[in-house]
Length: 170
Image (cartoon, rainbow, N blue to C red):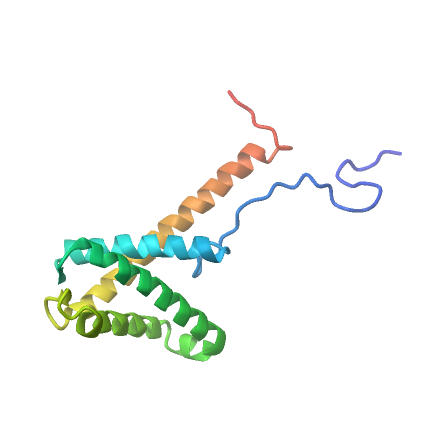
C-alpha cells in the first residue's frame, strides 16, 4: 500500500511550507506597525516635497521643514484613520473616503496658518485644496506601484520555489 508523500502518519501538514511576506495593501504597507510607519513617512515625505516643489504651491524657509511636517502628518493620519475605521466605519463608508480628504486638508491648513505661520506658506488660499488632491492622487499611484511590485516579487518567489523548493537554472 502506497502512502501519499504529502501526508505524514500523524495527519499533520509537512513543515516544508515556504513563508511569504503578506501585506495588506488596502491601507497599510506592512502588518508590522514600525515598518508601516517608516514606509508611510518616506512616501509622504517624498510625495509632499515633490508636489509642493514641482507645482510651486508653497514657500518654505528651507527643505528641512518638510521633515517634521511629513512626520507629524504620518502620525496624525495614521491615528485618525485607525480611529475612524475602528469606531466610525459608517462615516467612512458613507463619505466614500471624502472624510480623509477633509482631514488631510485640515492638517495642511493648520500647518500653514498656525503651526508654521512664518516658515511655511501656501502661496494662494486655494492651493491647499489643489495640494491635498494631488498629494492623495500621486500617493495612491505610488501605493499601487508598490502593490504591483510586491505581487510581482511574490509571483517570482513562488515560481522559483514552487517545485519543492528547488530552482532550475538554465
